[in-house]
Image (cartoon, rainbow, N blue to C red):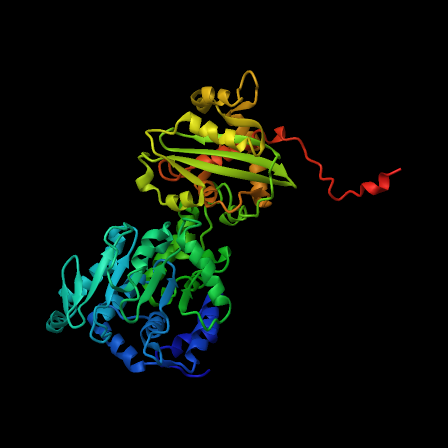
Length: 552
């Protein structure tokens, strides 16, 4: 193997020679990103700059381990010949226990230092919660104000000034700040580097984009993500993972994003300690961590509620909770299939909501070509008390037309029934399903548009027993990818928020994973439509029949 740098080579060799367990993403990173970049004629490796940066480790109570040295060298020392950094975005996905906050702390300390040397290079630490955002900030603060050796105090005081709100590199006038997911105060920060911590919790890109807009005003602008995986599906991290796969697949000379992804590759590896180093690259360097994880594995049969957390955070291999999830995330994603032209076709409708001053889900379901097609819409009361706690891009979905905010104290019944009246001009709505409580509130409004449970009998009042009867149909339709929501992220969100509830006879109902902020109204409206799916007459496709053979 060609030698590139004494700081980069050891990790490359370890992976290429199979000296340590690793996932395929590590090999792809080296083969399709790192080596092709290091062999470019317009790229240089500044070993002196890397060495000076790493010399700052003496101020910390720990030293970087091999994978961290490798990444630090690529971040700090791989440059274009015009002086710009090559990797302007770094995405690090490692399992819990890898020491990611320690690595963030060292990077931030370096970026403030004279060895980095860029004036006004402000660093923003970003996380969803203040405690998480402050973790690495506090590490740097403690490093400066409480030196590991007394003789370092004067040097640190000469080069850094630290308060509990702001840390400054005196020579470069660079600042280290911490932020939460609130948009407030992020404009015009002249940011040099944004570090996103635990991105699996992010659901809304608007605040992230506001912070990113401050990049470009300072030389060597960087975006760094360092995170474990998590339980929130379809949000920012899942979107990035899809892009990461494309980046890793093949070398692209235009790509300047470095993807460092560590995970187990099969679920069955979860209890094999030597395999877990695939997800936690520090595992062999931290004996106490190894002991802790060994105990978690031994205890797992008696604490299976922890298993999904272990898989997502330790193993970087989220699986959901198969005992209670309505469908796997892969099966939920599979609902994003192209909608066919349903104009004029027979369908059934459904409504669900908990309170009229919160969310109302409405929908139409069609049965065609062996698949179940569902058209959905959500009404949201703008005064809902739950809105501040919901981690979903509701305004983004509003812009798509999937969500409609109602500026009132509640969502009026005529708004709900008006949607069905409007949709009835395009589709043939045979019957609408909802439970008795919801019908009592919507009764008069439904009568105005010709729907009634008793006279016209085109309203069906859903009972729990009806849902129990159709739950096997719903399950089968998900696993066979027969449900089509189209590109409807809010329906994927609703479905992922719903859990199965099984009685002692094995019958299944549906409930909320979390009662306030993980809404299920859209999914339950869909479930209601399935209880009357057989009201849609079977349609025979005559398109492939040659009627000519029957001519006389």
